[in-house]
Image 1 (cartoon, helix red, strand yellow):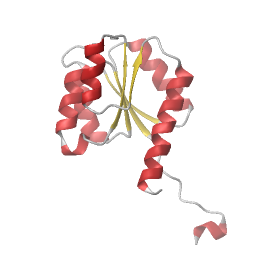
Image 2: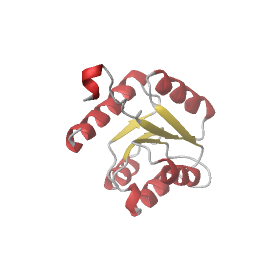
Image 3: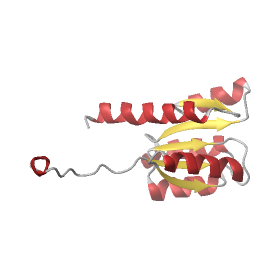
Length: 140
């Protein structure tokens, strides 16, 4: 009905949670994501990331492995143990390239594992692919 008058309900912005302890990476990701119309939340360790994920219900989490307080693997495992966190899409974005790190993350159902340094355009494409796939499977 509203379409007839040229009004459309604006769909909510995709929410991305960036969990990384490196300020330059966090700021670069935040700036680039916001330029591409994403809503961005930030945490600097896994413990805070888990809390913010519960409060904000992000669509996608960009998660580093090596962080203080709680590392990315531990946060991911705790996230997947929560009913509210089982279906959140996670992309590991880390300098850790060992096979055991990748296997541990994949066992928790991540979307992708990207090794730093990374290409921002490629990362944005992966996020958009995740968002589009979720819309399709949700019937939106």
